[in-house]
Length: 184
Image 1 (cartoon, rainbow, N blue to C red):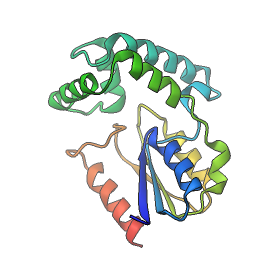
Image 2 (cartoon, rainbow, N blue to C red; image 1 turned 30 degrees about the vertical axis):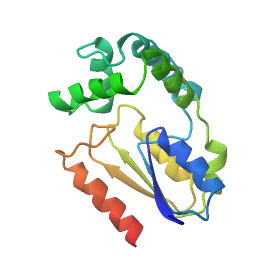
Image 3 (tube, rainbow, N blue to C red; image 1 turned 45 degrees about the vertical axis):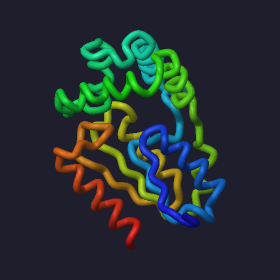
């Protein structure tokens, strides 16, 4: 593909911003979902930094363990409205993808991202999507992204989930919103 719409969810949002700025000729539209400009470990809030450190500890000792306190905490943040099957699938995915120590190292790195200085350089049409009750990145993080990117659009989804699930009404709103944005 020579030119495409780029979709970045969660920690993929700051990565997508950096890519879009470096390659504006390749990105026709930028869609940022549940993202942030400033990672949890480098935000001004002591509470968020402490939560980030606590999450790192839980990852080290519970990554991929079905029924573990970590999985309960993780799923309550990412998919609080998830089914038992979806939560068990999440644990299986964790076990298959990386070790607990690697997961903690990755989490620490992405929680240290800072693309605040890049936002003003985003030049392509941008849609920022965020769930009202996102337990991973607060709604204000999505609003900050939208405010920092000139002429961006903001779509708030009525959901408790960081990852929108196919059984909730926000699922259709998410895909309808992206389709409309790209085709306008």
